[in-house]
Length: 256
Image (cartoon, rainbow, N blue to C red):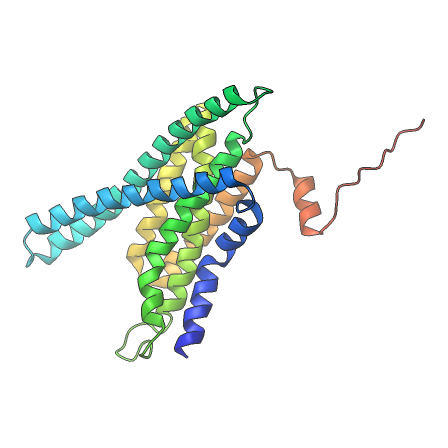
């Protein structure tokens, strides 16, 4: 059963984000570069937060369990704030790069819009976040061993995969929301990104009460997905056509 668990959890955790990458990113070299750079920025934020966590652990009393729990909560929320800080820094960097691309083009237009950069950058954050969240779990799921044999939750691997999937997609939506908030100076949108990120990360502290963490996380994902869709110019008509697999009617309805 170990191999089915391994492949099943892999496809659950990375299936949607991998599909987005293959269908919307991989054919455009510029988008690939933006995605890889976004993944690198998330990696740097993880490195810095890990350094702070390491210093805190070494400086604290290892026998004080309450202090260890406080450090865990502090490290979690500090990491979230650092990730959003680096997302903002990446936005500023991409904004400057976009202006340079527009200046070099013949028509004065950038080959990629800010909305597209936000989506690709967010996907890069999400893919790297998911990879670091899931790689050790997947290596253990490949066996040998039986899940829950020592009294642990038997759905640990499956719930971890679903949480990784929701966080990967949320990072994509958070990128769209933060970039839009910075572009329009709607700082409440940036604040909403930080608050929802803190909330979803804080919910993981409820584990192994997985219902208490997964259900609110998926509800927030649906809300942020709809919010990002409409901020990016989506409409109810286009959504309906997508769900019904209809193509836009380009025939002229006017009379000659």
